[in-house]
Length: 522
Image (cartoon, rainbow, N blue to C red; front, side, top):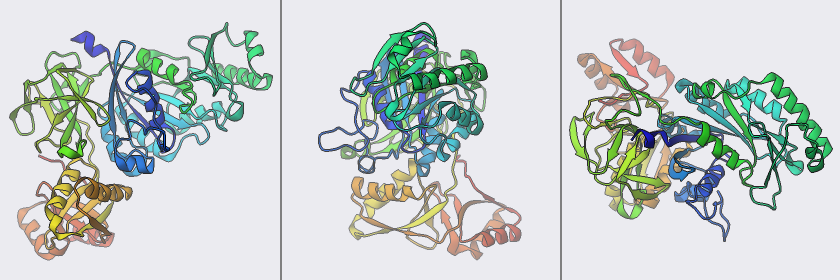
C-alpha cells in the first residue's frame, strides 16, 4: 500500500485567465496517452474541444468555469491533476480545489507577467505552504525579459525562484531553452512537434554558437550568468517546504517545454502529504482510510441527473463497496461505485489510495467539507467558506416548470458556487454569488440542464449576514426587519441588508445579536 501511495502526484494548475492553463492540461493528457489529440479552447469546425472544458458553456465561451479532475498514469506515477477556473468570478471553486492537492503549478503569460488573479490564488497557496512550480508560457510571442519576469514573481508573489530552464530569444526569434539541470538545449521549431533535444557541455559549449543566432545567444549567456549569481540553485527539501520554486519556460500551444515540466513534476513534486484534522495530524501512509469532500457537481451526465461528490483520499486504501463512517451525521454508508475521472468521463474503480481524487454518487447526503472515515470520527480542516457579494432574484418564465427550477436551484447551490436564500415574506428565491459571471452560468445551466427558463434581476441587497444570539432579541429583530430576512438552504436565519448604514444601525441597536459573514454548518 505504501508503495502505491508514494506513486501519487496530486496537483492543481492555477493562473490568470488566458495564460494557457487549459492548453497545458491538454498537453499533459496527451503525454499521459489518455487522449489522441490535444484539443483547442475555442474549437473550429474540424478541431476537437479541450477535454477539461467539458461543459457546454465552457466550450462556447472559451473559459473554464468549474474545476475539472483528470487522472492518468505517467512514467510509473499516477497523476491526479485539477484544472481550475482562472476567472476571478469562479475563484471559490479554485480555493476549494487547492485544499485537495499537495502542490501547485502556477502559469504566467510571458508578455504580461504576474496578473491580479494569480496574486489572489497565490495567497491561498502561501497560507497552506504548498510547494509551487512556475511555468512561464507563450515564449513564442513577444515576451518580457526572463530575469525581469522572475524578479516580478519574487517581488509580487513572494516566491523564491530557482530557474531550471532559460529561454534563448523570444517571439518571432524564440530559438529554444537551455536546461541547467541536465545541460541540454531544446531547439524550438514550430514545424517540428516537441522540437529537438541536444546534449551540451555547459553554457560556453562552442556548438551553441553554431545552432543559435549570436545576438540572442549572447543575451542568454549574460542572463544565465546573472541568475546563477543572484538566484539560489534548486534545493528539493526547500521546494517541498514551499520555500523555493523551480521555474520553467516554454510554449504550451506548440508543446514546447511541456515535457520538461511534466518530467520535473514526477521527479520533484511531493507524494501525498499529511493532513490536519481537528483531532490530530493524519499521515497519508496510515493503514485506515480517510477522506474529505471538497466539491459537489450536479449533472456530469445530464441524461441521468446524477450528482457527484468529489473526495480527496487523505490516508490509507479505499475499497469499493466498503462500509465507511460519514462523520458529520454519524451514519454508516456503503460507497458502491467510486469513480476516477477524465473531466466528465467516469471510470468505476475497485480501489483508491491516499492522494487520489474519486467521485462518489451523492443522493443528497454530502456537503462540502464532510469527512469520510473507515472508523475514526474526524473532521479535516481548511475548507474555506465565502460570503456572497452580488445578489439576484430568480423569476420563472414558465409556471409549469416550478418543480424543475426548485430542483435546479437546490442542486446548484449545493455545489457551493452559489448561495440560495428563501425570503421570509416573498416566494421569489434570491441567489448570492462571489462574482457576477456566476449568474450567467447559473441561468445557462438552469435552462440547459433542468429545462427551467428563467430571468435573473439584480436585487437591492448590500451584504448577507447570518443572524444568531439571544433568542428573545433575535425574535424582536425578526419582528422589526421581516422584509429583509431570508432562510438559507440549511434553514438558518440570514439578514439581507440593503445598505451599509442599515447594517451599522442594526449592530448598534441589537448588541446581543451576532451578524456573521460566514456560516459554518453543523
